[in-house]
Image (cartoon, rainbow over all chains, first blue to last red; front, top):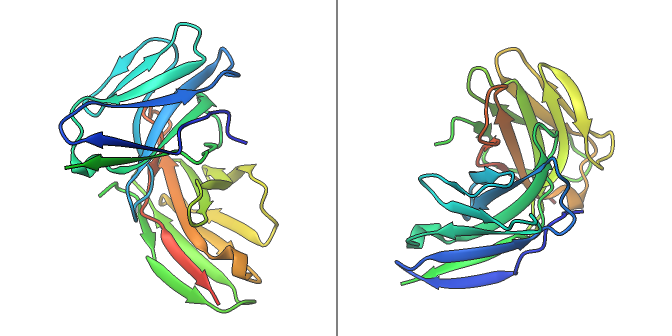
Length: 110
Length: 113
């Protein structure tokens, strides 16, 4: 079973920041938080990951709470192409498998 | 274009038949995993290979088997197909040095009738 809880769906206006929450209250000290997204008819795409510090790359920012029980993926300026299902996954670095939950279906509206 | 290519993109098979799905990845991607994704669900882990040896398996029966080859390609074989095997099958690869997660292919859509 997935160790994360995410809202089923979210909407965001184009050009605004999209903030996707994820709860992982049972996360272990050596587990990382990974985010993937899946655009319709494609395979999942890696976005970002972190252990306890906030992370930023060219796609997104990841904010992890101090107790590590939740995190937020931020897409700073959402575009229509960001419409996808976003998966939050907790995993030990180097683990064999990714355990996907249902994810959040994010719809960016014009 | 992710560097991970899966073939065929779509396939229709009859119940009871056997199917082979293929995946090719980038040089140096020694880890390959296969996932099954039913409609409306997240991907489910089938198994993983590292340097041609299976090193992890999910809750799938033995009629799901695989191979990994030295040229960074791999296969997923499914025997005695059942209607519930209809799904998107995804291949994901990773190099030993990667610190950015797995790279997925676009998948093979298998329909069993």
